[in-house]
Image (cartoon, rainbow, N blue to C red):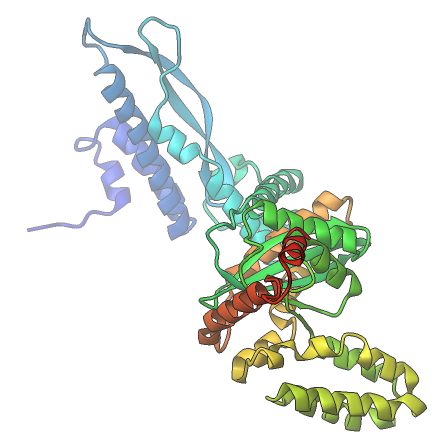
Length: 438
């Protein structure tokens, strides 16, 4: 018949338990008073100590037994640290050296638990959730008074160093992603300004409807040189310039110029209709905005490209006399607000690709996670926070609505590009050669 004995009773039963076990159980009783988590931590640290000693026995052999073939010897103990959640805690770790005394023998158990990756993951997660460095320690789990007294890597400066290291690693991971195996259908570009620093970011949508953060580039403003550098970097990382790509931008002339410089004049570009609508309405008095907005939306909802262009042209003519600024704003890049209509995209996919909303959503995540930053010190800091936000947004991405039409869109664009770049079959041989070398 089994009998349950309390820990306290077990400690008092000196005749049954060895002194070492009594001491360990005594520590557990103290930890148990501080809660189940503290008790679990104390048990875990005790198990770790036993595992370390057991590995030394396996590497060196049992203590006190002569073995002429041994390849390693014990070398005492020294102070070490292991990762426990969002902190580092001190432990006494055993050491072993090669029998010739030339080198240290690594203990796999210690190296596994001493790894800092878990700590960096937790610091990154909490910082992105809005926890400040000075309040980081307050978010720690109650793991026992003794452990909390001895814990390390939880100070404001230590947390900041850990976060900088991890976000720098994330920035490198993002900017070194190979793109040669990606079959993209859409590439969206947009800019984000963070307290005087500007980053241009790129979002890709594959033919399967998956959204991916592709990269970013920093500059003083959203200019063509910065955008061209970003696009050139994407090409250097394997982005195929010959595949059929639809570019979606917010209407920035600098972004349009950069696309032309890197990818040529023939690639299709869709201007964000929401940005265009806002630009036009900003030139109108309040009383005229709703009727114009309704007409803009009606034109952009058209499935026939020629009818849609006719409606926008008529609206621009009507605005010429009373609101020439609004008319000029509408005409600027007007045809490129109808690119997806011209390509035959309809339904939910058209609504998705008519605007930069997917890219704006990613940028909004960047703004949310950096809301507690009080002081921006460098462009590197801006890049790191932006990259971290982009990758955080990527974990929440869903397939775009209507994604089944993306593969057909990519094929159509690719065929159109090939047709546009082929010389006219009726031209002379000399003209053909000249066209091919341009």
